Image 1 (cartoon, protein in one colour):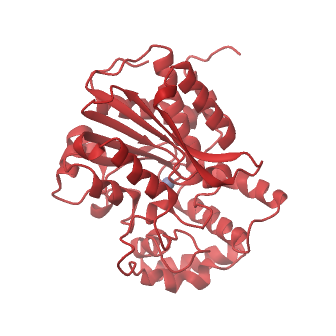
Image 2 (cartoon, rainbow, N blue to C red; image 1 turned 180 degrees about the horizontal axis):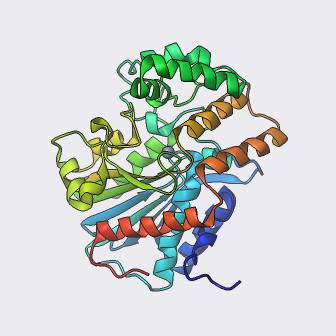
Length: 365
Ligand SMILES: [Zn+2]
């Protein structure tokens, strides 16, 4: 196929979890980086029966002081986007379009929630949203009173009835309280959306293992956590949840300036949330390191809630049959990973810009 001038990298998005995992491994092999790749298997499988695992890859000198971490698949199905960003980066190295400065290393983490990626869900196999799992489980979990109020509406199986009930609730609560009620995180309803779990999940434990293994607390780290599905179509939002006045916030602001969006001050597509994976990394990294979510918008918040509430209802009674799963997977992919090659190209070009902004004086493309 003739390569297009503008869309040379659309193939980065091809396929499901197994295909993406294979492409990622091939790209790693082509770079002769097999010594620094690690697999973290799960005791459950892909729908095909194939093994399921997360992977990590270290690129650069072992003792590099500055490290860019690129996380993918915190929200299972969104791993298709993070995987494409990582594959694009690996292909840039392979084509010798880019060379890493000697004081920098890159740590790629492929599919922090591999079950969700493989089964086309956002949560893990226990219904847990890894990005609400970052709380201290020794203490009582945060209360989300509006979630309890919304449950009767959220559980309406028919989408039109549910949306009418939720529209009425939104009128009563106001936009922000309504959105926090649904998506801020809840710790009471494993079959409901945005459930944070009752114990640390696989992706959180793996994050902590990687931080310890690579001594990331002693280095200067910029962590980019790649997501999709929130915000305007094809818009790349750099979401920062570092607390006001923190050194992490200052580092992020120094890197990204006015591009940075802050849920706490209302300048983000994201409302404030409990138990973000950010909090786990914030607590473990050095104070001047930073963690930023790179969120790529798709079809808007109402579509996000509709597709996730359908998904929760379909899975509430257990794993649905293959035909139902196939239809639901198409709906999930339509929201989280649009097939539009221009959306996909925008994701990759914008991710290159962000990585360039972090690592600085680097030729690219
Ligand atoms: Zn996400």
